[in-house]
Image (cartoon, rainbow, N blue to C red; front, side):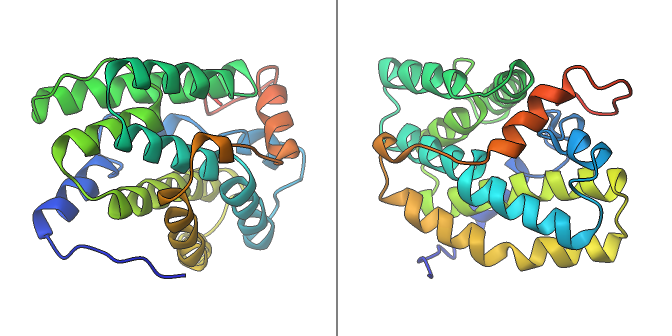
Length: 220
């Protein structure tokens, strides 16, 4: 499923910067439960990692984050954002996952407000990105695609270190998921918070078990 994309280079460059590993939100320190999945042999190679990430995107946090992002983009009123922020935190299945979205969101808000002057309160990460994009006049379609691809890229980077995967294997898995990111972005544009929901139980359990994992490189 294709979605119309802008050709405005300024908008695309802003989104590329926001979702870049260089943007100081600390994404590199979170694995979204993947570290436990690797230790427990649920993810052992490129194929099992791609399957894991596909499920997280389509049935877990990827899809829900896109819906929350779109809702924040469409209604950036403070009271609406506060409700979305509380909803995003409540939907986190574990303390670590809540920390992941809250701390990345707060860091994103601080940096974005300083570089692109805007009134941004601390918000959960997808809510923060959606609100900032709306205030900056960036296109929703591209914001969603860049966000989902950034989400997938961060977990791919974690998998390259944890499994471990070769750099080429990791990039091959990421490229294979590009059409899924595009489809989820298109669906989120017309979705509402009534469409929130998920069924990625193993990923949720992984994030819970990670809290007591003996040796950890990541914060989630």
